[in-house]
Image 1: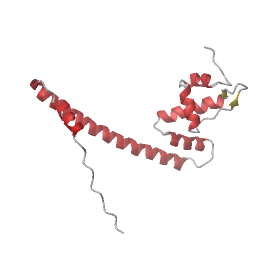
Image 2: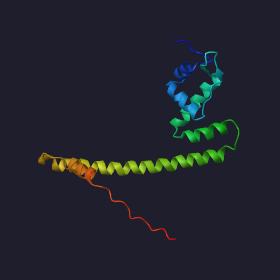
Image 3: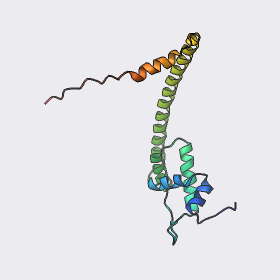
Amino acid sequence: MPKVEGPYTIGQLARAAGVPSSTLRYYERSRLLRPDGRTGGNYRVYGAAALERLRFIRAAQANGFTLDDIAALLGFREGRTARCKAVQALIEDRLSDLQQRMQQLRDLEAVLRSSLKMCQQFERRGRCQVVDDLRRASTTTPRRPARRRVSE
């Protein structure tokens, strides 16, 4: 396929960036990407800057930034706000999120290791204790916390 330098249709831009067209439409709804205009047939048209912006968005996502973060980063990139302190705050937030997810994954790993050990111990019975435990847990009605009285 020949390399297109622009203007791009939505399909051409999506192919150039290696993403589905639906991703571009989502980025438009999220206000991260805007077409440069429309053709007479009302097709979206994008320039080379849109491809570069799209690549920036994808690189930021690959580095763990949320779409809200990316909107802020795009603003920083375009010089509308101070950069370093604000970017540091975004990175600190993502690091905090990552640490929480890693702890959750460690907790999940411990549960799965315990389940595996239980399966191995009860294997000879011909009935899986883990499945039995999950079945019991799925049929048990969770207890609701007691309601607090609101003082008047």
